[in-house]
Image 1 (cartoon, one colour):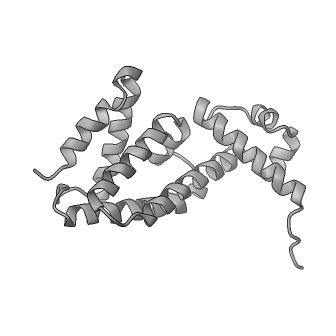
Image 2 (spheres, rainbow, N blue to C red):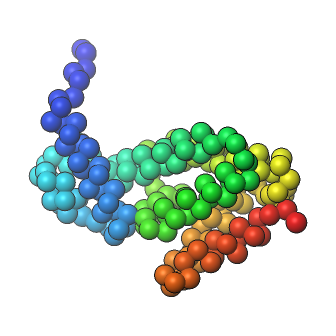
Length: 180
């Protein structure tokens, strides 16, 4: 039996659900009820459940899309390895600072659907790290696993700073990554 292509209205509804969920999860975290997301998307709860049978499946789809976009961006960087490394980390941290679910995903607490994009992002991050290390500006003993832990630590610092001090934690952490 051949599978039919999704109807255009079903594709639009899915896109609206994902957009609404992405905004709601970023702002309020993973505890947002599916009925609230349905209302934000302008669809009924049944439509949400047809596309995403569980909240975890919706959450995983939102996170997978976000991590995939970051991985794609990291994979396309090529010119100045040190600037690419720090600019990418700053962008990732800035996005995660304002996105509760992305911060959780970087800590590895989101479902299996996000695993492949998370691994892809990790590989791209490792490639950026190795290029910066080869240039001699980043500590040679730093691993991508260390970097994940450091990013999470920097986000914790940033989330505790007042808005007028935003970015200070990252600056301090970034200084520690340099090869003196």
